[in-house]
Length: 290
Ligand SMILES: O=P(O)(O)O[C@H]1O[C@H](CO)[C@@H](O)[C@H]1O
Ligand SMILES: O=c1cc[nH]c(=O)[nH]1
Image (cartoon, rainbow, N blue to C red; front, side, top):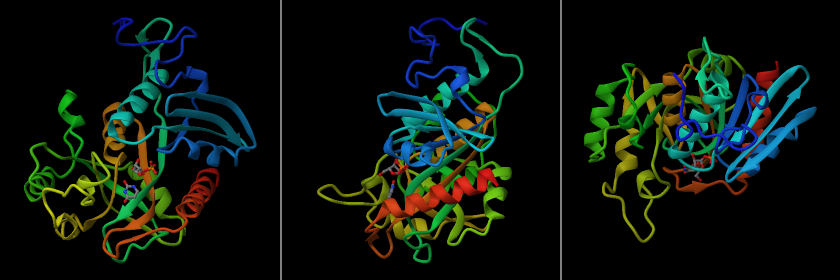
């Protein structure tokens, strides 16, 4: 199979279209973030930075701490950007870009999201961290991909669809068990696990109303009561389920960690969200280099 120029799109230097990366630019462990400015906040802890690239909202730094090599990539906001980041990281790892052919065997990545999020539970306060045991996607991406994979908790998704009066079908995907066990075995204060709801917007999809109102006005109270296999819905954000979906479909290990900067029950927003994110960055790097 040879991928044509319109499908596997390469720049003049042979790099992949949006991310502008070459195979040698990507480490086995990738940290993904939404905010492009967060890439430098992570790479400031590297002993050495070997790659710095940027195109649109996709900023990449690759470097190392001791012998451990990391790539940090920003996606910008939303599941549609995650589709690009995951597909292009995977292409760089698993396609021979010069020959335009799949490489034999799978070269899996370990991918960890370091993001921000709003808590849906009173007892998950500002400043805590949620490791998403599963992501539930309200973005509709799954509808476009052919897959035989059985996804997690279809009954839960059907119930959610009814409660939120959605026309689209939510999907649910679990975290990498290895990565989730890895982080939960660390003694990180204020670390919670639970189901993350990945929304296709920040306002009505997350129950917020400014001049426009959500279709279901009491969605936060309704969502708080949902649980599956003992896991409740803990938080709202905008990328996790898409990362978990592409991690599963493409064969990469994926875990999403969220710094809680909003609490939607107590109606609070962090005064200094940067400090909460910086702590999560340090805790995550300590875990990964240990
Ligand atoms: O801080 P990041 O990683 O961007 O994550 C969260 O913040 C953004 C919304 O403000 C969305 O991308 C959401 O997922
Ligand atoms: O409430 C919040 C906070 C951060 N990111 C989100 O998507 N929602």
